Amino acid sequence: MNLSRAGEGLRIVGDENNWAIEPIFQNTNNDTEMYRAYLQPNSTYHPEKHHHNTTEIATVMSGTITINVNGEAYILSQYDTISFSTDGTHSYANHTNDVVVLHIILKYEI
Picture (cartoon, rainbow, N blue to C red):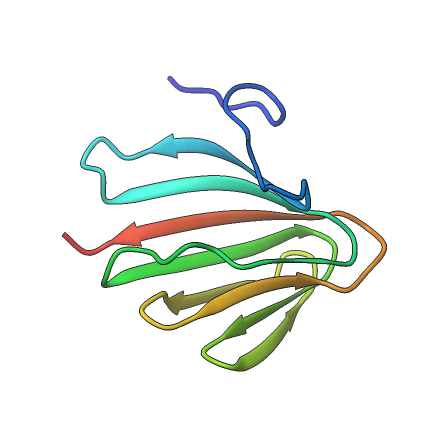
């Protein structure tokens, strides 16, 4: 049994404190990672490049966010989910006055 509580354990914060991620669980085969992500109000996050053939699945747990994938903008609200290949570019933008909380899964093709 594994238990991951928000706010406990490892927390990686951006240089400008505008975003933070908390690793949840990592698959023992190293093909799946799960994170809680927090994006501060009126800020953006441009993730580092992922491995080739990676799929990212992001679910909005609270708030509204704009996710740009290969130049196309998608506005997601609470409980909306998007899945995309990370071979191109992507970014997250919070244009609201509230913190956005996301659940993110990275699936690596091995």
